Length: 251
Ligand code: SAH
Image (cartoon, rainbow, N blue to C red; front, side, top):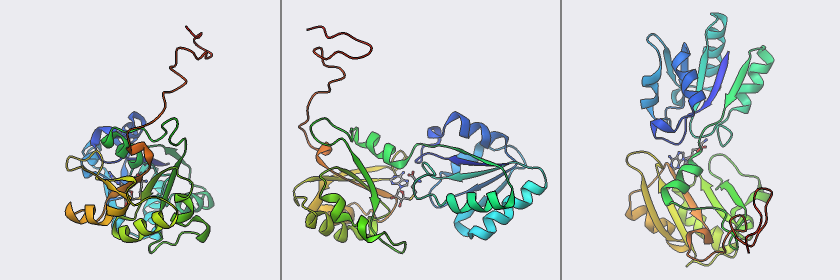
């Protein structure tokens, strides 16, 4: 059987208990070596075969899975963060379906959660934004035209921009053309939850400069929105005047 497992954003203790259990028991691990913390591989048992998918094609990954399956062995396919975001898991699952190989999927802590924790921030502040747009700039992987960054920027929602650290001049331009002010708050979180994590607060207009000054060229998230500012409304949930299913209003 194949277990797709989200490795978490970096820190070794941010994998789930279930994911760790699969890692400890499996006979083979195929891990996304470009971003998964190799320290997680220490959990594997003696004799576990380890492959780095950063150096492999989809066909090679599937060939390893098929070989292990034919030997009755369990394989963990270890993806960074949560595999549902930019994880390229669907194409693997579709081939496994066609081959009649069983698999399951264990979620992980995505780097967008790791970045919020690094900033000690809440993405969904009442009175500021109740939505989070997770997106990226088009790079070598295209983004559908209707999802261009400027159109999302126009909503004023919290934005988490993946895979775009090399394109920050373009990110700023698109955000501003979508209506964000160059002075609006922004942040760059590099290697969230890793020991060498960096948190850089800047503005929409200074993203590229801030990255340059801090030598950040990859493995970073760009965060944009009023949630990085200082004003917001109190929550209704914990408001004494608000009755919920679990609590009567006290005044
Ligand atoms: N599935 C992953 C994302 C994979 S795409 C997840 O859920 O996090 C790879 C991109 O994710 C990187 O280019 C970077 O933008 C972001 N990323 C991954 N790990 C990160 C981390 N620890 N800190 C900041 N950004 C990270």
